[in-house]
Every structure is written in structure tokens, then in C-alpha cells.
Image (cartoon, rainbow, N blue to C red):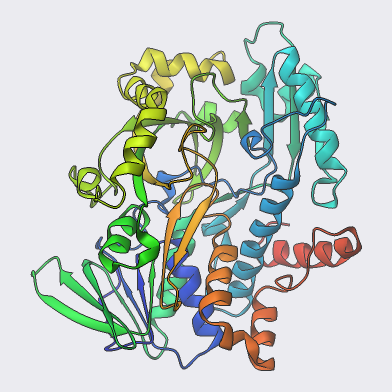
Length: 499
């Protein structure tokens, strides 16, 4: 753990030490070295909640394998892949900034936080085989996915991922594969960036400190902070506050009292993984494999079988399994988080959502009461020969899905990350879900563009941002920019030791 350091009356206060705050703090400091920045984190160690390596899938979400980003097939048989293209571009910005951090000596040893792992989509049944074939046709036509391979050949799929075909019945199957996928330990990259930030002049990082209140001042915000070890209260003022506290963001957003927070609620969903530590099984699987959605599951609860590299060791995860909870944080949450978030201004929204999402509540209760045999039955859809003795169940992170008045019949568990910013752009709060961590650099770049436009308005500022993210002002989705994209992607891969 870093020793807690404090900066009085900084320019910026970052609440939370996850990947969002880490990227934003590092980018702001490189844009304007004179900025004073203070980070507060409630846990003693950094990045222990949603960004922690064991609390998420670690997929470098690039739209390659996640079928939920291309969910529908049109009447003419085609699949709209525009969302996958957009996500790929956003993750590329993350890769470029992290590569810049390596090149500039801000962080070292990239294999400690990012590793090459092929990304596969895998389906079974004639309907889904046809869908995946159409999805591949749409994606491979774009230069981002030109290297994607599609096959229905069982032997080829078995060569890519032997666990998928071992013991499988003779049914139609198909898979796509791209070797340029990654496994990312978002907690580790956050810790590396924050250690760098803490060593910069005018910057402080304090673990074991909970921000309990935010009060508007004439020129910014006053944060009330409690040191958990001693109970001591301190107050600090800043012109700008970023609430990147994961599940804790909603409560602080409500305490800020800004009009933009009215009517917003939160719905916590716990996560669990099956973990395989059997080295013989782990050695057979070197991929992240995303499958077709389960009939009863919400949109984003798509099962996947993932190679992970955590703490220098390869392991294998399967899930996610959802769990009912009223906590907003895994380690520092309270069972009163959900009821405490119900306010007069969001009560009607929550009641409406509850009435139209009863199947989701039933699903979460069912998930939480599953036996090991039930979970193994789901795993067998991917890995028919799996044995329960090789797997154990662990709790993962908690995500708080933002609930807005516009949610309802379509369900509240959906793709997207919300950034709530007030009218004078003095406070931003992060809410939402997948693929947040993967596209975190894109998200905080939007925060900078909205709340710190003066830092980009000068030639010096624009050049600094261009150095950090070479494609930030280029639409690399367009065919005419394909060569520029490939050049920058190759450079990032080399710096991150992915190629």
C-alpha cells in the first residue's frame, strides 16, 4: 500500500482509485503538469473493487467476441456490427494511452497488466451458426476485423480451444477467432498509474479515506473525508471533482445535490465465477470464449470461458453467475446501500422499473440459490467434459446499473456507461456497466473534452494529447484511415509487448 499523501485545496479531487480515476489523473497531469490532484480511496489498497483482477472478466473489450454488442439479425440475414466497430475504436484508445505510459517511463512491465489472448465467439445449433456466419461477414468486411476467421469445422475449433469440443454431441457448431485479443488486469494498470501520479509534484493519493459528503462552494466543491483508521475528519476543496467510485458513485452523486442527479437510481448485481486451478485443464485452454446468451438471462449476462493471467499465473474462469445483493460495493459496501439510495426524486422511477423487471429479479434470486450442480450444467454448455472437482466458486465484484426514467420494458441490465456532468462542468460522476474498464481512456477523454476544454485549446495541449493518443482526433473507422490505424496499432502492440 502507498503511504497516504495529501494535497490541500487541489485543482482536482478524484474519488476512487479504479481504472477510470487512474487514467483521468494521469492524463490530466500529462496535459498540464502544474495541476494539483488529490485521490481518495476507501479501501486500504488501491483498485480493489470493480477494477480488481478477480472482480471482472479482464476482457479487453474490443467488440471481437461479445455477441451482446451485435445482438440482432435483420430480416435480410445481415447483422449490424456498427456497435462492435465503435467499441473496438474506443479500446484502441486505451491501448494507445497505456503504450504511451510505457514509452514515457510512467509505468513498466506491461505483461503484468496486459497479455495476448485470442478472442473467440462460439455457438451451437443451426440458428446460431447462421447468425455467427452473418456476423463474421459483416465484421470481416471492416479493416478492424479483417483478420477474423470463421469456421464450422469441429477439428479446427478443437484446435483453437480443445475444451469446447471434448465430449460434445454431434450438433452444428461454429466459432470465430482473432489472435489480437487481450486479457487485461485493470486493477494492476490502475495501481501503476496511481503510483506514478503519487510521485508527481502537487499530487496525493490516500487509501483508507472515505469521502462522506460533497458540498457546493462558490468556485467548486468541498469534500468531507473520514480517515477510516482513526475516524478523523478532514475537509478539502477543489474546483473539479470526479466521482469514479464504482458502486459508491451514485450515493455521492446524490449527496452533491446537482439537478442532473435527480430521478436516477441504482440496481446492484453481484457476480460470481467458477475458477479452475487444475493445471492440466488450464493448459488446454488459451482463449477468451464468449457464447450465445442463455434464454433466461438479461442482455449482458452472456457466459464466457476465460483464460486469465493474474499475479503472474494463468488460470481459467467461467461465468458470470449473477447474485442478488443490496450492497453497492464488494469490499466496503453495506446491506443498506440500496434502500438508502431510494429518494423521493427517484422513487417513481424505481417503482416503474421494478414493476416491469420482475423476471430479472426472479433471475437474480434463481442465480443466487443455484447449487454447484446447477452451475456445472451451465458450464457443460461450453465444456461438456468438465468435472465439478476441478472447479470452485468465488465472489466477484458488484456492478450498480444506473436506472433512468427512460429505462423500463426493455430491461435495466444493458450495455453502456453513463457519465453525469453538471451544468457548470465542475463535477462528473461515472455510472454504468460493460465495457467501461476497457474503454475507460475514451470515457475520461470525453470528460476532459467537456470539463477541461482549455487544456486542449492550445497548440501545446493538443500536441500533448496527440502524443498520448495518436488517433484521438482521427476517425480510424473510415476506410481512408485504415493505414494510419494499422501503423498506430502496431506501435502500441510493440510497446505493450503484445506483438
